[in-house]
Length: 161
Image (tube, one colour):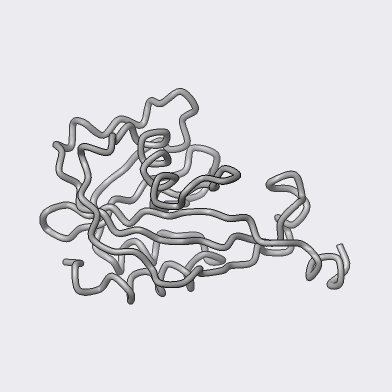
């Protein structure tokens, strides 16, 4: 794709959830579709006309089997955060329709037990999970998402371990 073609592409509307436990540790999960370590927080697209807060709750249930009654909302980013896909992924993910994502992030406290988190969903996205410190999460995320994760952690810093 030419730079002009890339610049003409929109950002995919998306939500992300920083799920923390009582100790302020962050839920991180290893992507099932990556041969190399690629840990991330739950996130996913917003359906047409869907409220971002409801999309965040839907994504938690779809990705890690965490239902709305198992979380307590704490905060959300005041603005949309954007990231661009690296050149090698442009035209390959999301049907080539997007240059990256614009994300609204939500901070939620996990109120359930660890054994209530289940990655064996209808369409599994993750192979493993663990509670992580913020610096561990930043080190484990794919490089092209590192800046957006750093911005999210800065926004929610007061709640983290």
